[in-house]
Image (cartoon, rainbow, N blue to C red; front, side):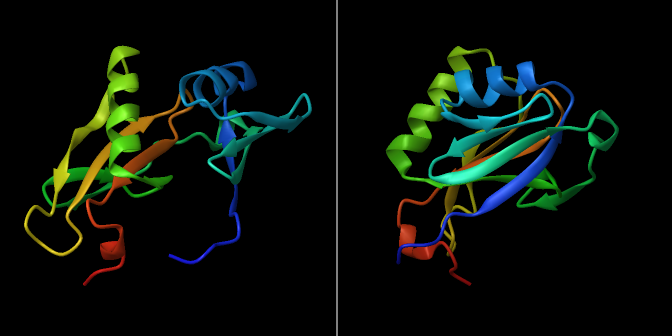
Length: 140
């Protein structure tokens, strides 16, 4: 894969303290700039910004993907397989409640991947996935 420019994503949260606990402590994302209303995090080289906007923290609908009810509105990372397994273990040890438990999807098909979904304290859905063969990220 080529070097990609970092993406930027802003999203609503109910509380910056909860966002700092989740993104900073649990996920290990270093904190960048902040104010009383927002905080930047380094999400594996990408800039995500939690903005206090409780009214925007709504439940999203889900769609069926290979038998899983996947939140339509979500973001996340494609990790290496070892990093995915390490994160899944860290999240399990922390008592994380998964909305889609860590498992393999599309087994034996192009795009076979490890995946897991969880919610942050404000109800934002995150997916972390990994491919045994990263070149299959966009396989049809």
